[in-house]
Length: 95
Image 1 (tube, helix red, strand yellow):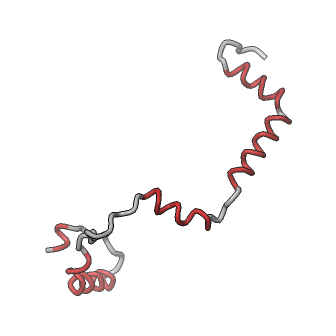
Image 2 (image 1 turned 30 degrees about the horizontal axis):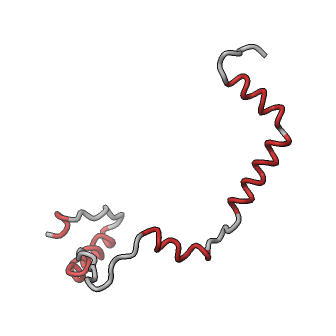
Image 3 (image 1 turned 90 degrees about the vertical axis):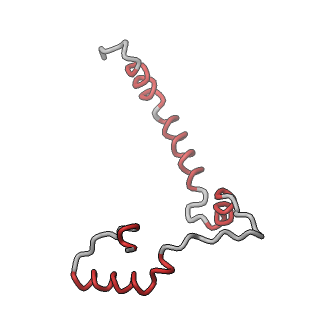
Protein backbone atom coordinates (compact mmCIF):
# COMPACT_ATOMS: atom_id res chain seq x y z
CA UNK A 1 0.00 0.00 0.00
CA UNK A 2 1.05 3.62 -0.46
CA UNK A 3 1.38 4.33 3.27
CA UNK A 4 4.04 1.65 3.57
CA UNK A 5 6.20 3.39 0.93
CA UNK A 6 5.39 6.98 1.90
CA UNK A 7 4.38 7.15 5.57
CA UNK A 8 2.04 10.03 6.30
CA UNK A 9 2.17 12.03 9.57
CA UNK A 10 -0.18 10.96 12.35
CA UNK A 11 -3.45 12.86 12.56
CA UNK A 12 -5.26 13.99 15.70
CA UNK A 13 -8.79 12.68 15.16
CA UNK A 14 -10.48 9.66 13.62
CA UNK A 15 -12.38 11.89 11.18
CA UNK A 16 -9.14 13.45 9.96
CA UNK A 17 -7.62 9.99 9.54
CA UNK A 18 -10.62 8.88 7.52
CA UNK A 19 -10.47 12.01 5.34
CA UNK A 20 -6.77 11.42 4.77
CA UNK A 21 -7.39 7.80 3.75
CA UNK A 22 -10.12 8.81 1.30
CA UNK A 23 -7.91 11.53 -0.18
CA UNK A 24 -4.99 9.13 -0.60
CA UNK A 25 -7.16 6.54 -2.33
CA UNK A 26 -8.76 9.13 -4.60
CA UNK A 27 -5.53 10.89 -5.62
CA UNK A 28 -2.91 8.16 -5.13
CA UNK A 29 -1.90 8.26 -8.78
CA UNK A 30 -1.10 11.99 -8.51
CA UNK A 31 0.28 12.32 -4.99
CA UNK A 32 3.47 10.36 -5.48
CA UNK A 33 4.35 11.02 -9.11
CA UNK A 34 7.83 12.19 -10.00
CA UNK A 35 8.20 15.80 -11.08
CA UNK A 36 8.29 15.97 -14.88
CA UNK A 37 11.51 17.19 -16.47
CA UNK A 38 10.87 18.68 -19.91
CA UNK A 39 13.36 17.53 -22.53
CA UNK A 40 13.11 20.64 -24.73
CA UNK A 41 13.88 23.25 -22.03
CA UNK A 42 16.83 22.90 -19.63
CA UNK A 43 16.15 23.56 -15.94
CA UNK A 44 17.10 27.01 -14.74
CA UNK A 45 19.78 27.19 -12.05
CA UNK A 46 18.54 27.90 -8.52
CA UNK A 47 20.53 31.15 -8.37
CA UNK A 48 18.98 32.39 -11.63
CA UNK A 49 15.49 31.60 -10.38
CA UNK A 50 16.16 33.51 -7.14
CA UNK A 51 17.50 36.54 -9.05
CA UNK A 52 14.17 36.87 -10.85
CA UNK A 53 12.51 37.87 -7.60
CA UNK A 54 15.25 40.02 -6.08
CA UNK A 55 13.78 43.36 -7.25
CA UNK A 56 10.73 42.58 -5.14
CA UNK A 57 12.65 42.01 -1.91
CA UNK A 58 10.74 43.46 1.01
CA UNK A 59 13.87 44.64 2.81
CA UNK A 60 15.76 46.34 0.00
CA UNK A 61 18.53 48.47 1.52
CA UNK A 62 18.34 46.76 4.90
CA UNK A 63 21.88 45.35 4.65
CA UNK A 64 23.30 48.78 3.86
CA UNK A 65 21.52 50.30 6.84
CA UNK A 66 22.89 47.59 9.14
CA UNK A 67 26.44 48.36 7.95
CA UNK A 68 25.93 52.09 8.58
CA UNK A 69 24.65 51.40 12.08
CA UNK A 70 27.60 49.10 12.77
CA UNK A 71 30.10 51.73 11.61
CA UNK A 72 28.41 54.42 13.71
CA UNK A 73 28.49 52.17 16.78
CA UNK A 74 32.18 51.38 16.22
CA UNK A 75 33.03 55.09 15.97
CA UNK A 76 31.06 56.02 19.09
CA UNK A 77 32.42 53.11 21.14
CA UNK A 78 35.98 52.81 19.84
CA UNK A 79 37.53 53.11 23.32
CA UNK A 80 35.29 50.41 24.79
CA UNK A 81 35.91 48.08 21.84
CA UNK A 82 39.68 48.49 22.27
CA UNK A 83 39.39 47.53 25.95
CA UNK A 84 37.29 44.48 25.08
CA UNK A 85 39.83 43.39 22.45
CA UNK A 86 42.65 43.88 24.96
CA UNK A 87 41.04 41.58 27.53
CA UNK A 88 39.79 39.00 25.02
CA UNK A 89 43.37 38.05 24.24
CA UNK A 90 43.33 35.99 27.43
CA UNK A 91 46.74 37.21 28.55
CA UNK A 92 45.36 40.10 30.58
CA UNK A 93 43.01 38.99 33.33
CA UNK A 94 43.26 42.06 35.57
CA UNK A 95 41.31 45.25 35.02
